[in-house]
Length: 415
Image 1 (tube, rainbow, N blue to C red):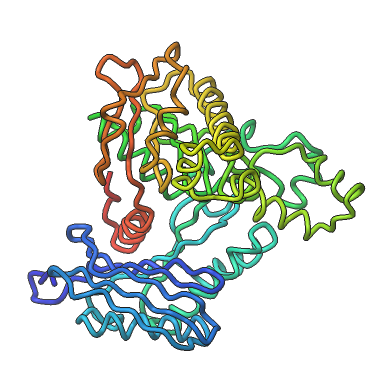
Image 2 (tube, rainbow, N blue to C red):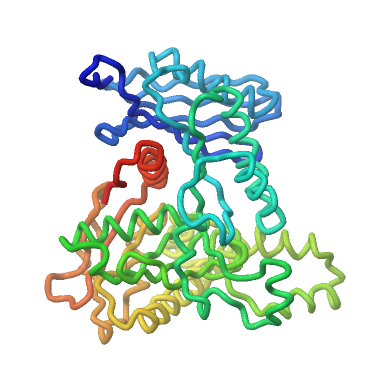
């Protein structure tokens, strides 16, 4: 609690909500020092076996708590979150709470920055549901639920797509009929934007340079995966497109594929649009290639001589290497290639294989540095390398909290 000169309480806390169709992830942060006060998850909302997992972190924190039982809807879920926070003296009704920040997946072209939610803003997010049918409805539910709990607080939407709105038209447009594309909002939007923004900025810090002076290729490799080319702090290209399906090979998504495959499957296999959607989004990628989407398990199988797992890994790396080369060409000059998210941060063999053979581009990985496991940003290339190879743990919740707090207080966002 920070007293003002008049003795009043200055609100410095931000509650970050990430609302899914049947889940609610949350973090409470104090922006005085960007510390986390609590983190948690409500999952299986709407089921008899709903689960709440809450971990208090303030002042050393109490033990992690977990409870199960029916939670009917997102309103009940947020009530459960409020109860857990109140138990630690961190109530949602606290005057120290400055705002609630919401992850919203799709902001289209209109929302290029964090935005205080109004009725008009919420209506526009709803209008974008056709291009984000799996995500925006859940995000809207989370916002409305939070509005009901704290109608006096600013609710701030932070959009996954916002960071990518700086892409030039020649990178964002598909080569299809312009009138059709415009009528149906068909273009490349990109996703994971809060991660790409945070990681590209932290990479510049790691190099001891200003973001506007650095060109970075960011590789966000989790179950979902995306790449971006960031020139001077601005995204100029990214691998995901109209939806998160385009681009890299992912855990269950195919990534880039000839669009005629969908027509072929409808004609030859008799598959419906929904069948193809499920195939490409949930039964493809690594799980489609070898039955596993856990990189640790795939590497274990490779070590045991499993050729199917080896081929899946090689396809994954081949696509990744192609994007590194493509974005090197787009940027012209590259100062760093940075790996982030679950696979990028923890799978040393992925980093090694993705960079192998790119020595002529100035890219080299030091085997000893690459093998080190750490939660800290670090460079894993040798000192002589012309281009740094880095590992920077992402922190999307902190990025959302920083953008939210900066917007509602007028303070500059942390660089």
